[in-house]
Length: 345
Image (cartoon, rainbow, N blue to C red; front, side):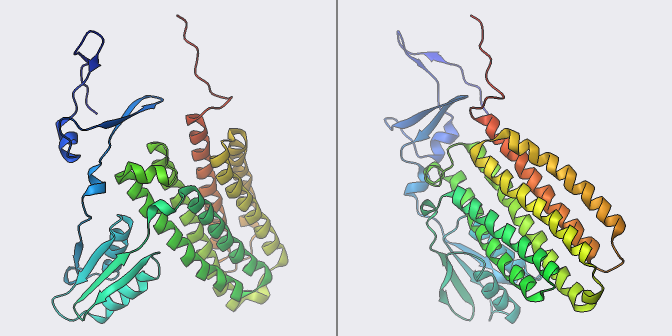
C-alpha cells in the first residue's frame, strides 16, 4: 500500500497521482478514462481497458523431461489449469515415457473443459474451453457441498448396511468433487486477475475470494475424509463383517447425521448471514466431539473402526470452520448484532 498526498489543482478540485507501475502495467496514457467505484472503506479505481482484455493469453510449454518424480507432470498440468491457462503444451525430447502418457490421460478426466487438441509422439497440446463468465461461484460451492455430503453419507451408510458397493459408489463420486473443486479454483484465480470476471461470477468484494477459497478447500477435504471412510469400510466389511455390533454402526451413523446437519446449515449461513445459527453449529461440534470420546472408549477392538470414527469428527471440524467463515462474512455486511456506532459531532 502506498500513501499519496492530496493536491489542490484548482479552486475546488483535489487530485492524487497514480502509481507509475500500475499505470505502466495497465497501458494507460494521458486522456484515458478510469472507472471509480465507491466502496465502504474507500474508493476503487479500475482502467476501462484493462490490459488482460486486450492482450492475448500466451501459450505455455511444459518440459516433460524435467518431470522425473512420480505424478509431478500430472500436478504441473493441474497447476496450469488452476492458473487459468487456456492453451499449453507438454513436450519431450524423445517419445513420451509410458508413465508420462498415463499421467496425462489420467488427469484429463479430472479437469472440466480440458481436452487434447494436438498430439504427436513427443508433444501434446491441451486446451481449456471453459468460459468462467458462464458460471456463478456460489452455485459451484453449493454443488460441491452437496457432492461432498453425499460422499460422506454413502460411505457411512455402507457401514450401516454392510454394503461394499455403496462404499465404492462414494469413492467414485469423490472424483466428481475433485473436478468441481479444481474448476472453482480456476474461477477464483481468473477473478483475481480480471475484475470483470469477478463481477460476472458473483464476487462483489475481494474479501470473498478468500472466503470462497477457504470454503472450497474445507468442502473438498470433507469429500476426502468421506472417501477415506469408504475405503476403510470396504476393508472392514471384507474381514470383520460378522463381528461388527449393531450398536456401533447405529451410534456412528447418528454422529454422522449430526456432522451432516452441521455442514449443511453452516453453508446456508454463509449465504443467508445468520450469525446465531452459525454460532450454534460451533456448539454442535462440542457435542460431536464429546460423543466421539464416549464411543471411542466402548469400541470393540476391530481394525478401521477408530479411524472411521475419527474421520467423522474431522468432517464435523471442517463444517465448524465453515461456520466461522459464515460469521465473519455476515459481520462484513449489515446485521443487527454488530453495527457502526454513531459518532457525535
